[in-house]
Image 1 (cartoon, rainbow, N blue to C red):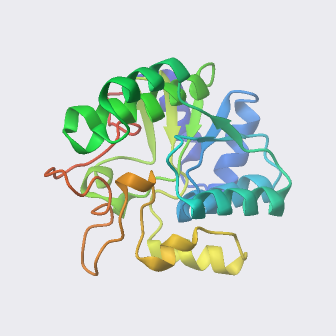
Image 2: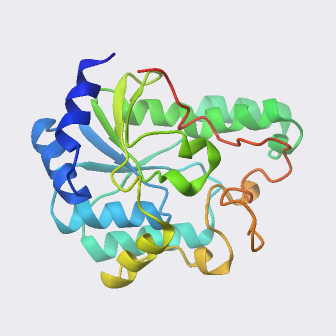
Length: 236
């Protein structure tokens, strides 16, 4: 079991999100990052970081296929807090090769092709964004999907060799919305149109009442646990 995992698990136990983030920023200066995709949860954590001037680098994965509304909330967030949000783009050579040989919509053709696209547009840029860091902050919540319900607020990421911390892991969606309203935090307008989970535009649709939180992601695939690979559970 990784020592950093044990340490972070112990020091964050019983602390509120802002307290825990403040503590981690103090303990890991220059080695802690937060990844945002500008969804409800990520906007809450961005507010906690920016409003409290915590020295945590905030970054996003610019896949090149995002919604117009996502770009809008990106701009609104930077206007509100006057802080940088670092963008990581896909490797140009890998992206050009995939699109040149398989076309721009190959991800619809097979799970293998979709995972290849996610790998190029998300996984490879993420590895660059996380390189050299020891703590990765995310907006994951337990009730977002069955897969995420089996996770924990502190985890060891074996793929990237660092600790992941989910500060609002036990929050409900109602608590997230209430926090956004309380602090008047900018959020993606697609959430008001039936999009609880927002990714790339070609791979995301609105969900109907009663559908799973992530039913709108890669909806054409017949899988019970649909993830792009960013948050696979690995052994500690």
